[in-house]
Length: 498
Ligand SMILES: Nc1ncnc2c1ncn2[C@@H]1O[C@H](COP(=O)(O)OP(=O)(O)OP(=O)(O)O)[C@@H](O)[C@H]1O
Ligand SMILES: [Mg+2]
Image 1 (cartoon, protein in one colour):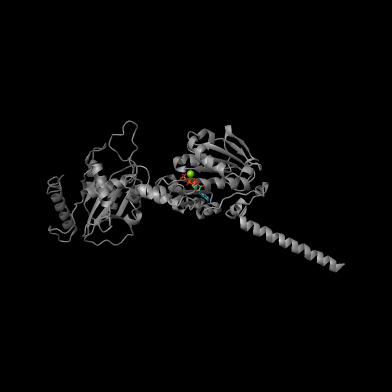
Image 2 (spheres, helix red, strand yellow):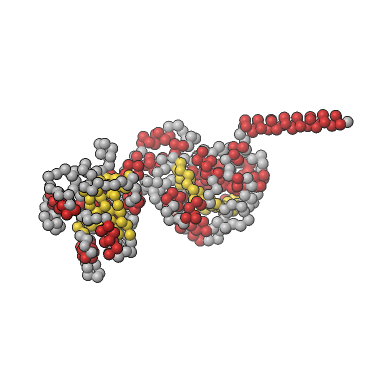
C-alpha cells in the first residue's frame, strides 16, 4: 500500500517536472511574455498584470530603454536623436504602468493636438496588444482610455492647457517632445502628481535636446535644484545610431547630407547645439581646458561689462608668446557695490581693462561708471562695441587653426562664460521682417559681451615685436598701449585717449 503510494507520488513529480521543462523551453524559445517583464522595475509587477496573464507584448527594449524602464527615479528624461526610440519607450512605460498599477490615472501629452494625434497617440495604440485593446473602453471624443483593471489614460495637448491641468489628480504623466513645452507646464504637472490609492507616482518626458533649456537645467546640470531633489531626476541619453531597429544606412545618409551642427543636435543628441545658436563651433572638448598656472610674462588684459541688477561680468584674458589666448578668470556678480567690484579687480592685479563705451556716459546720479571706477583707482578703457564685428572676432578665435588648436580656450573654472557662450542665440526673425539683420538675444550675454570687448581690443599679431619692455606691470601696460596705438592706426592716441 505504502509502496504504491510512493510510486504514485514519484510519477506525479516526474509529470510535474516534465511540464515545467516544456513550459520553460516554450518561453525561452518564443520569448513570449517574458521579454517585456524581463525589463521592468519591480514596481511593474503589480497585481494588475494578472488581468491578462497570457498577454504577449512584443517589445525587447534597447539597453538605454531598459535602463529607463528599470529606473526608480521620480522624474526621468529620455533625450535622444531622431528616431532613437523615445516615443516608443515613453508609450511602453505608460502601458506597463497601467497594467501593473490597477486604477492608476495617467496623462500622455504633447504640445499641440496634431502632433499628439499623429505621433504619440499613434505609437501608443500601435504598442497596445489587440487582445488588450478589445477589453478596454476608449472614448475618442474625450481622448480617454480605460483598462479592464480600472487604469485610465487621458491624451491631452498642452498648448493653452493651464485650466485643464488644474482639475487633475495624476498617478503619472508622460510628455513627448518636452522641449516644446515650457517649464511652467512641467511644474504644473508635477504639482498634479497626487493620486493616493496607488503605490508609485512618476513623471517622465522624452525629447530631442534643445540647448541649455529647462530640461538641461533639471536633468543634466541640476545647478538650480535643491540638494535633496537632485536624485529625483535621471537622464537617459540616446544618440540615434544606438537604435539598431533603424535601417542600416539611415544614420549614414543623414550624416552625409546635413550640416555638422544638425548632426550634433539631431543625431548625436548634443545639448550644446540648438536653434538660433550663434557659436555653433563651441565644443567643450576643444575650447575648455583645466586651469593651470599662467606664466607672469604673458600678455594680460580684461574685458568688462557693467551691470547693476544684471551681473557685472569681468574676464581676464592672457595670451602666450604664440598668440594663443586663454580666459583664465572671471568675476560675475550682481547687486554689488562699485567698491566691492573694484576690490575684486585689484585682487587680480593691474591689467588694462576694456569696457563697454557706455561706461563713459553719465548716469542718473551724474557720474559715469568710468568715473566711479576711476575714483576707486581703476581705469576703464572704452572698447569697440560693434556687436557683429565682435561676434565675428569671437568666431575667429574659436575656429581651430591648421594645428587643430583654437586661438581661444577657456579655463574650466570660468563657468559663467562657458554657459553663456553655449547658450548665446539669435533672436527669432519676426514675420515680415525676414530681411532685417539678425540680433542676438539681450539676455545671459554679460560674459559674452565682456569677451567681445576683450578680443576686440587685443592686438592681433603674436607677441614678438620690437617694443621695449622692462618686465614691470607699468612697462607691460606701456607696451600694450604702444601695440594698441600701432594696431589702431591712429584711432587710439599715444596717451591712450580714444
Ligand atoms: N526596442 C525597440 N524594438 C523595436 N523597434 C524599436 C525599438 N525602439 C524603437 N524602435 C523603432 O525605431 C523607430 C523609431 O522609434 P520612435 O518613433 O520611438 O523614435 P523617436 O525617437 O520617438 O523618433 P522621432 O525623433 O521621430 O520622434 C520606430 O520604428 C520604432 O518602432
Ligand atoms: Mg517621437
